[in-house]
Amino acid sequence: MESKSHIDNDLSDSELLRYSRQIMLPQFGFEAQKKLLGSRVLLIGIGGLGSISSMYLVAAGVGHIVISDDDVVEITNLQRQIIYNTDEINQKKVQVAKNRLQKINPNIQISIFDQKLEGELLSQEVSLADIVIDGTDNYKSRFEINKQCVMSKTALVSAATIRFEGQLTVFNVTDNSPCYSCLYQDTMDESQTCAENGVLSAVPGVFGSLQAVEAIKFLAEVGNVLDGELLIVDNLMNEFRKIKLKKDMDCLVCGQK
Ligand SMILES: [Zn+2]
Image (cartoon, rainbow, N blue to C red; front, side, top):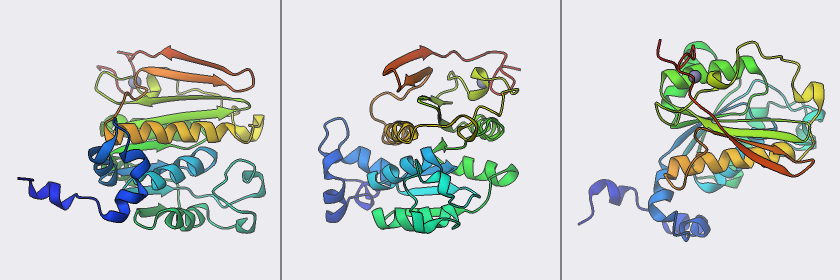
């Protein structure tokens, strides 16, 4: 006999149809879909990466997505942040994004913060999330988000793009996984941003999609997430490579002090 919790989690007919093309995958199936529907994702920053990852997460059936961003839509965003439309310039990104995402999938719970998540609020939202997706574009935020993820043992999908290049990894998957601070020093040069260096339109789309794929696999417990490895892609030359990452035992954030 099925347990009560199993019955409570059964998928409706419309859910079975909506998600049928991934439920039919032998590696995925009903159980993975139910896990996804029971998951909560925190997406920090909804720019080039986040506008893509959020649409796929909502379409795929992540049950609850929490999004924070304090920006408004600007004309320079539209070349790559394709969740926004031209007639939405000067509107709050999180509000515009919520409306769009809710149209893609009305059954998903979407919570928004029209502000930078910092301090207590950041700590609280990271703790509540099953996984965090970093969609920010500056080192200060990335270090702060990483610190909170390490403290609450929450996995962190990290990506960055610039010019024609991008990189991707998942930090804090297990106690033995490296964290962002194992890889980067807290003295990074803030001038390495899209605003300063430019980025080709579709490159954040590639990495936003990869962030969604990693988050979905992690939440649904299928396949292998990119734990302890960094994927580096040069889209100009079509060069893809992976390098091994090691936890730094002397890391000031996650190391044994
Ligand atoms: Zn570390």
